[in-house]
Amino acid sequence: MTLTSQFVFGQQTEKKQVAIATTFLNYVKNGQMEKGWKIFDKENNPNITKEKFENGFTQLNKDLSTFDSFELTMSGVKFDGEKQFNQYTFKCISKTKNIVDDVSIDILFLKSSKLIANVQPKVLVKDVSASTSKGKETSIEKSFVAIIEGVSYNITGINIVHFNENEGLLAIQVEYTFPTNENNMQEFFQKEGVKFARYLVENGYVNIAKLKAEEIDKILLNEIGVSFFDKVIGQGFNVMLNETEFK
Image (cartoon, rainbow, N blue to C red; front, side, top):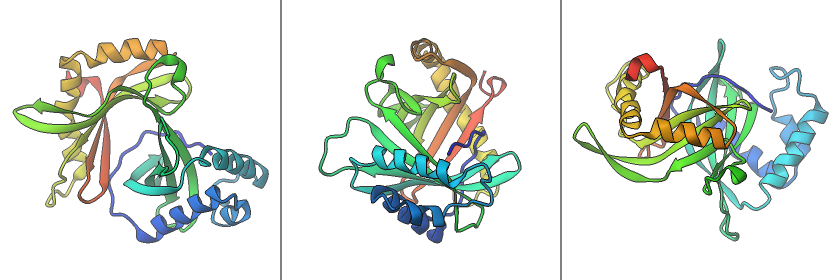
């Protein structure tokens, strides 16, 4: 169950969809495939037969077998062509086992639907060597504080985000207090993201990412991603910047 698209985040969390997503994750953890199938959006996924769903469900059940619970960490909007999806990212938590990798799962709904349109696991591998890079992101640098244009920002990570099978996007994740009186959040964050993209360029992260991309057999895209996250309201907003915007 994979959806590939360019993405833009930012929305109010819908409690019903969060509750349905949490229920689905518990179905997966407990191996309740039939119940999971009932809340899967079959109409908008005509190519996903019950057999294909069961195969994906079984694999996901194995992947989540070491985790005890799931915590909502981000919500947003994702576009695939003209279709708009609400996306919820859950962190997988284990209180009983020592898990090396940082695992999360994206669950998507088509607008206000109460049926799950897509499920996408992601793994941020903490060991960044090529031999252990097995997930959707490869870490370049972990949490630190950066001074950008005279302001201190908590950078929660700099990563290569994996696209398709052979592409990677350099992306920076930053804690950020969202404006409360901004009408066009997309335009605001697109402009605000420029200084963070320039920070990566000016501090040599593009060259580092190119070398790391070669190690993991990825072609580094020319764009740079900036992920803003307001931990107070629990929402995120991601933008992708072209070279012309930050050079």
